[in-house]
Image (cartoon, rainbow, N blue to C red; front, side, top):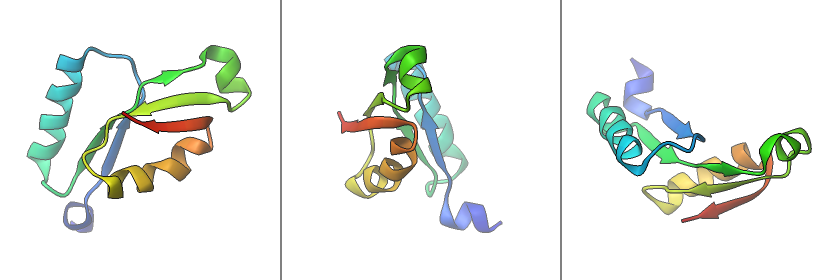
Length: 83
């Protein structure tokens, strides 16, 4: 399918453990090397979500991926930080 050729982007905004995050990353990549997984835990709580002032701390595999996710996450928050 065209999605496997171009790849999908999976953004996880939960606060799961680093071990689970690494396992999810491996599972995403095992489906297709073109897919990418971003660990992006969020801070700001319910008020931050309501006010669109959340902070995302992102773990991306590349600068290119970070540039792709910034506009998406900035719709929900005020800051998208590379970590």
